[in-house]
Image (cartoon, rainbow, N blue to C red):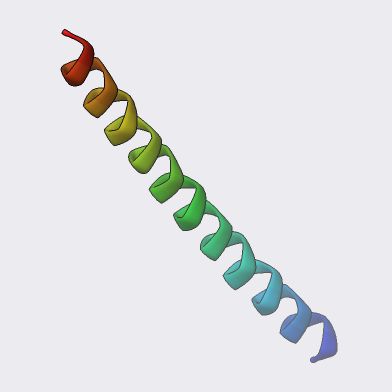
Length: 40
């Protein structure tokens, strides 16, 4: 069961990282859009 617990922990940490990186990409795109709008 120790391996199962480790697998679950790995899965949840991986999901959290993917969600955070997805949000980071969204934020970067929003910043780029803001800068482009301001410069035009």
